[in-house]
Image (spheres, rainbow, N blue to C red):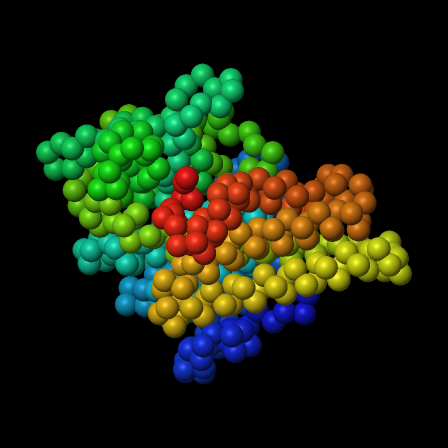
Length: 419
């Protein structure tokens, strides 16, 4: 249930500047079939596993196996290599976001791991050279190889933190040596390959404070390399536990030149992060819709539908969800119409707004249901923890300030919302 909103690309296409209507009918049916497959798996299988992955803080490997068997693992791989070509620079990004939303309704942690994989496919499809694409996409399509992208190297230490984080990269004959640590490395121990963003200026990943943009490199790292190890002791968060975003250690890991993706600085110079900003919002929306469904069932069971205050909460929730869906459709329409500058700007606004709408939705669900809805095991309790944690992926205040800078014509950082 989605508060009266039809997720079908055919319906939402009316807000897409006409591009959706230009697709052959069979293409629209195929894309809807992909969404339906993901939704069925999420409802019938993934939702039942979510509590286990949450309590054990373990990677949703079985879910990824099922996605592969269902023909969904490679939806963001170009059609020329056996995928469906979904993504921001294709003809259909909304279907990709709707698949993500379906997964987030079952398990927000699963959706985050899936985002990392799908976004990596988008990067490879648009930046990797032909030899790299042929080699890596074959593994994804034929064998279900899992990918992820990592940047996280926070420079300021938190209170009580005893060690610093960060990597150093050294050019050597035939490639690069990477030494040091990254944190918030989503899918650590579950993914097979990672696109790691490092900086020749020193620790900081893509966010080095003073280093040149030209120092940012994207390197494809085979995570089975024995020089790569994971430290699970760092990861004990309140929510998003199933993302297993551990500390990853690189012990002079060699990355051959053949695994360097794109040119130095390309990720920031071309604003690639802006392609993925609204993808996070799709996950936020999935969590909100799941909370809405739980609350509807709970209130029906408790016979609280006649309470006028409950009715007001539910009315606002319905508006929140519909507004979020319309914003995602709007942003998708801009991408698909090749209006890229507008799409990037609108995507940042959608990310901020849907963060607010989803968070407000979950809070209202809790108020409508009462304290029992936060007693484990409760789907709403897990959604509350996961969403509260996940929306901190970016500094929401800085996201809003970036939107304000855009309105004022000021210099801004659309990728990571730095000051």
